Every structure is written in C-alpha cells, then in structure tokens.
Image (tube, rainbow over all chains, first blue to last red):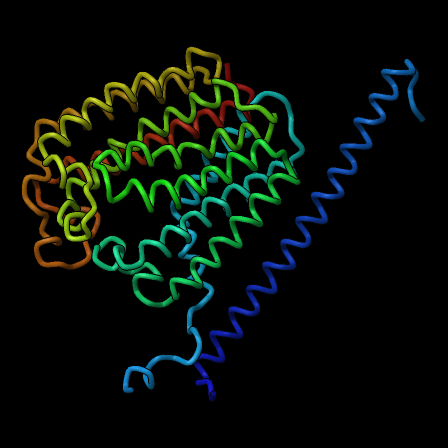
Length: 57
Length: 321
C-alpha cells in the first residue's frame, strides 16, 4: 500500500497530537497522585494530632 | 472499482477535525457552568485539583459530543446547521469518532474520580450515558419532548463541579441544574422555529415539526414564565448577592419581553429564506417574521452567561451573599 503525501502528512499530525495527549494525561495522573498523597498525609497528621492532643513535628 | 481507487488508503482526518468532534462551543459553556458550580460551592479546593476537575468535565462533555456526532452522522448530513460536522461531511469515520468518544469518556471519568471524588466522576459518567445513549439514541427521534428531557444532560455540569469541590450534591447545586434545565426548552425551540424544515427533513420530531409553530411559541412563553423566577431564586437562597439579583431580574424581564414578542409573532409559520434555497444561514438570514425567534435564541445564550458570570464574579470577589 503506497500512501499519498497528504495521507502521510495527516497521519503524522495525528500521531504528534496523540503523543502530546498521552504525555499530558501522564502528567495529570502524576500530578493528581502527588496531590492525593499530600492531602492524605495532611489528614493523617491532623487525625494524629486530634487523637494525641499534641502537635506533630 | 472507481470508488475503491478514489478512496484514501488511510484516514486524512486532521487533529482539528477531532477537536470539532468535541463541540467546542458547547464545551466552553460546560467549562463555564462547571467552574461556577465548583467556585460557588462552600469550602476551599486546591486550585490544581479544581483546574484538573474542570478539564475532566470539559473533556467528558466533549466525549459525549463526539459520541453524539458518531451516532448522528447520517442525520447531521441532512441538516444545514450540522452537515459540516466532521462525521457528516465524511472527514472522520464513524468508528473513529466512536472510539475517540469512548476513550475520552473513560479517561475523563477515571481521572475525575482519582483527582476529585467518585461522586463527581459518577455524575460525569451518568451525563455522558444520558446524552449519548438516552437522548441521542432513544429520545431524540421519539418524542417532541426530546429537548426537555434531554436538556438535563446539559444541566449537570454545575452539579458535577459542586460535587468535585465538596463531595456532595446538595439542593443549592440542583438549583443551578434547574436553571439550565428550564432554560433549555425556550432556547432550543427558538432555534427550532426557524430551522423546522431541517428537522422535518431529518425526521426529528422537534416541537415545531410535531405540534406546529403556534403551539411552540406558547410553550416557549410558558417555560419562560417558570424559568425566570427560578433564575432569580439564587438571589434569595444565599447563592447570589446584589449583582446576581440585578442581573437576573433585568435579564429575566428582557427574556420575558422577548418571549412575549415571539408569542405574538408569526415566527416559524413559514420556512426562512436560507432554508428555502437550501444554503447555510447567517445569524440574521431569516425571514423578518422569524426575527423574534432569532432574537430570543441569541439573548438566551447571553442571559445564561450573564447569570453564571454574576455568580462567579461574586464568589471570586467575596461580594456574594
């Protein structure tokens, strides 16, 4: 199957956008994971403080 | 044989075509109303979590649009307003649009669940299924009430935004839902009044096609009478402040005036000029008698934007109730 220059150009542009979208998705998942970890740590610390009545270091 | 030779070996669809599948204009309204729900909700939310949540809601809504275009390609090709859409015009294959919609739906729902909470993600998933499945496949071709029931899909974003911020969907969030839900019939039927020929050709029983223009004009007025008080209500329940009160009352009176003018007009009684010659219609390329319908349609968009802008401005500036 021989592709025309137009088909090749269109496929290349689509591939570039798919790659960019995948990278963006990975960054978003990573950012979300980091945020979640921070929130969980903060709430654990708050629970600990409430239970012991002290300020955690 | 000739057909096979002239068909491209692979798709020549451009990224822009896939972007068009997301219905960017609808998506911008979804972003706006979802962001309003998120900001108006009580409590604080991490700005990054909020931004990702709004992005997920926007992409989810876009995915529903892509599924709608994939399923409606043949019908869209029959109507002037929609025949330039990527699937209808043959630039994107139906299966490609379907796959695009399904993948974006899954990614947006999953990411919203991980990022915010699973109530918001569940509501987003329900919205996609409601719009692409319930509205597009079941309601649209079966009842003139299609837009009334289907309008709920467009009303969910502020509730999803609220749920993303708080993990709850209290009655205040559903008041925002009610505003968009009740706004949809007058807005859509005003458009349908001067595009009825298109809907009839595509076999879609929109109100002017099924019940006639006169009945549609009356129903627009009746819905407006219910919609305007509901649109003003946030000013009296602690959601909106003085700015919202002024905007909602002034705009509501304008909306009511235009609906009354439309009711007294003969809009929709005859096909518009562009429809008669079968070409694309410009904004005011309609018969003089259909102008009240076009005016209400344009004003309805402005009014909804103004309502949510007022809520957003008040919440961000601390001027709210």
